[in-house]
Length: 95
Image 1 (cartoon, rainbow, N blue to C red):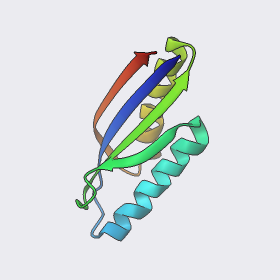
Image 2 (image 1 turned 60 degrees about the vertical axis):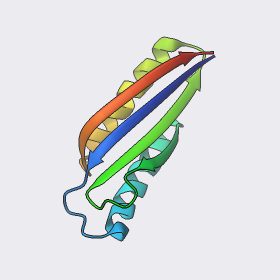
Image 3 (image 1 turned 180 degrees about the vertical axis):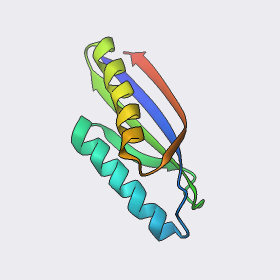
Image 4 (image 1 turned 60 degrees about the horizontal axis):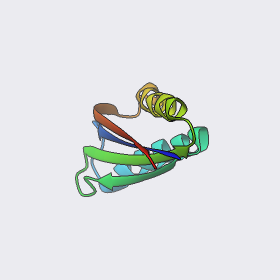
């Protein structure tokens, strides 16, 4: 079994409240969930209007497929254009 873990740090320019941030982050999370069937959540920077951190995980039986899907999630999030990606990280674990 292979588990892929990823993290995306985002910068949100036009947010002036937590309500505006929540709207953008929920949109990004739901699109990633629906497109890639991944477990996704906001995992950091909860009280900062202009920054968000999203974590996700995938599981499967082929390391190359998991690596490819993680790269596609990074690209998909960037192409949405809702926020600027500041940093990404990923880890693939064989169990």
